[in-house]
Image 1 (cartoon, helix red, strand yellow):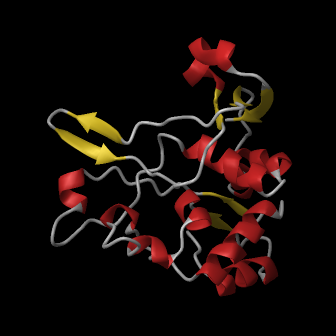
Image 2: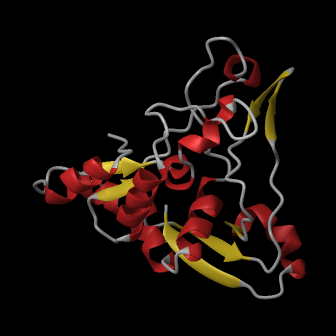
Length: 193
């Protein structure tokens, strides 16, 4: 279901109405170099494996296109750090914590913020003939980049939270309700959840 190649995006586009695919946030942002820059980086190891930059760009183009055959599939994997940093290294990226802010930034960077709701909330639901949620969440864009936690602590263990390694200015409004007085230019968008 999670596509990772140029060929897969083309196959889905050309397929019949029953063929659709999800795309993960980490495949939209990372290419295979993210596994090795500065040494082995086990927290970016996932399956399907990250591909070349040409494939990442094709996935990004598909996600930003507004084509209802493409939608979010987080494939989030909350593996403990000790399991990711072991000889066998579990595959998977834990992106659930900041998935929406990261995607909002990716779409905004590409001047396609208006396509975000369809990709995240509507396309997948429509493909599976599910009712759209009536409830909405609000995302806001700050004038300063958001500082995110690096780890999620679980008792004496921890889980590394996905870091796209670029500044994120978007967040879910409820998370920073107490910081709203620090926001110079507030831009809100609402999305079905």
